[in-house]
Length: 119
Image (cartoon, rainbow, N blue to C red):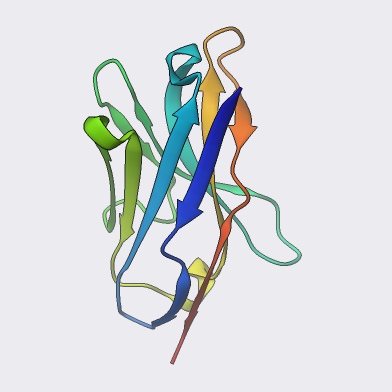
């Protein structure tokens, strides 16, 4: 099993920045990548970005491309998501997820952390 715990959410002013952390533990070697998703009320879950373990390649969703970054601290098994120039539509529950080497799908999920962007 893989355990993921997000932290760093809260209220952020429009135009500000956020920094979220995802701490991974358990059978991390059974995963190939870690990703971030967000869920806003009434909307489908949206892909924010991901990072692949083997080469640190990162991928970003269109809504955050150009104003976000994902990095990892291998020693701490932690992945960091940063988003700048925040907009109200960035509001939502941000969830961390990890892919399984067996399926390649995001099978492991954290509980999420709420981010609210307003003036």
